[in-house]
Amino acid sequence: MINLKKIIKILSVMLIAACIFAGMIFYGTFVSVKRVNIVNQTVISNKIPDECNNLKIALISDIHYNSFMDKERLSAMIEKINQASPDIILFAGDLFDKPDQIPVNDAVREELIQLLKTLEAPYGKFAVLGESDHASRQLEEGMQNIFYYADFELLNNTSVLLHKDSTHSINLIGIDSQIGGKPDINKAMENIDTNNFTIVLTHAPDLAGSLPLNNIDLVVAGHSHGGQIALPMFGPLFRKDGARKYTHGTTTVNNTVIIVGNGLGTTDFDIRLFAPPQCIMIRLTNK
Image (cartoon, rainbow, N blue to C red; front, side):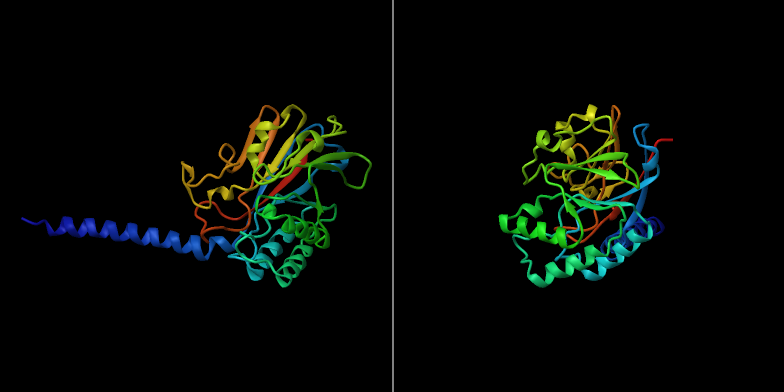
């Protein structure tokens, strides 16, 4: 004999589960992709000079403009990033989404330049290239122009000294993407004073496995998108080459901190579940 109450109970549970799943898909598709999370992270080291104490560094990456990411979405994200008042902004690569398939015309380039110019950082904005930025030689040259006119300094296997109202400094090393690029670690680290606090900015985080971490205090990267879809307790559903070991969040290897951001944009499909867009706000302190 059919137990009607049991059937109704099972159907009710299935309906609730379906509603929860549909709600997650709706949120991931129409809400999460448009909201950048400001994630605060503190890095402590006695190598940080007093003059740079509490320096705030914003890490962003993977804008993937000209596809799902448009002017309206990026403008809202930039506004929230500026409200966090970073001292320095680091961009870890991938400006456009599949530029070898989706044409990037002059109007789109100019639009993105004007948006990037509105990012505010009194002590400098710096960038490296990602694999999408290496889609062609012509595109690479275009990236250099975009960063220049947007007031970013492009670091391609080279380094700069970061100052904050003093002669005391922090090393910032930019290394080309492990995926699609030509990373040259030896060239990038030439003439580096390892007594200074040293930051490496690169696109694909798994490059950390090839770095002389005993001379590096902080590695920051993007590329992974946090998988775009992640499962609680299991992590990213999708892992990219170059971000299979370090997929998201913060890892410490000996005394080196490795921070991987989820990035701002999306690719392939416009959804983020348990892997929201992120700006990692890193506060450096010696206390």
